[in-house]
Amino acid sequence: MLMIFTRQKLTGNLSTTLIISGVLITVGVTFLLFIMPNMLNSSTNLWLGDGVFKARVALDEKSRTKGLSGLKEFGEEEALIMAYPADGMWGVWMKDMSFPIDIVWLNKEKKVISIAKNVSPEESTDITRQPKSSSRYVVELSAGTVDRKSITVNKMAIFQIDEKKVE
Image (cartoon, rainbow, N blue to C red; front, side):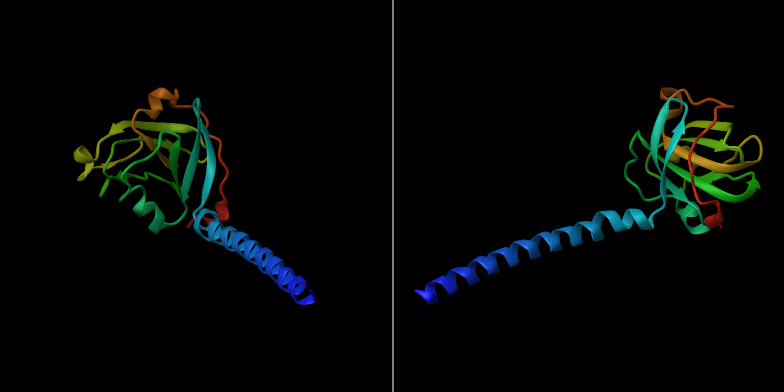
């Protein structure tokens, strides 16, 4: 009788241990696959015009150069903010792009200073699009977003990035 009780107790403890281990492994894998990459890739929320966007942030030359190249699609509620360390005539070249975009240039106060709508990769592989005046940030959005979200020159953008990390 004592032996049966011990065997049942061991089986119960083993089941509990396996369940707890499975939960911990699931949480760990979820962290590694979904949470950690988002921590490594800089992102922020962007309020611009009538839109709120989940924005990737490119803070260095390598990530600004890559931009949206290689992506097959880009959601209507997504954006890319390219931040530069100083004001300049920051251009956009659509090398290896597979979809059209709207481009919005912002000054250091985050005010819209220039817009290019529905820029097609087929038309722009040899052309660098530039703002009409010096900018600090370049925002790339899905084509048509500027019109859909009422984004116009002189509108203010709201977003937060760590300016100390801009290279």
